[in-house]
Image (cartoon, rainbow, N blue to C red):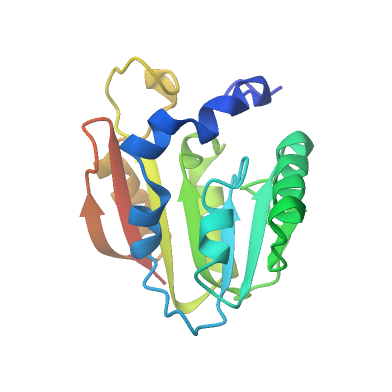
Length: 191
């Protein structure tokens, strides 16, 4: 397994009540500015166990594309969607640096706690720019570059200023920066 990649043996942490209390998925999903009747195509990068894919599927009649490199994670999402009878989530195995989608094929992108795994980061941001339609938004949640009890090692983290600059270099406009916790930040960008 790649040293930056989340270990699927720790997947229980992804759906923990503690995580939902600190980082409720609804607050990030609000930043996508989805209309209830909008049939948007939403790409969830590093979808994990469906922490964002499942709640966003209830907000749109469109398609949710849950992308992850780890087949075990995608199987968890498929199991949850079958159990909950969710019909608008499709799972895709793939890498952030080579998103297996056509140009300008998605309206929104969720990149939650995953961009620090990208190597190189600019390639992943270029791929997000490539697959996002003009005017589309990306909501990105990341770890601030500071020591914390949880999360990736400090040398893997991307500080908010650095990621802001990287998104701008990739051709995005920054719409919003927020710090929901002392350890996390959210960037909302638009193509």
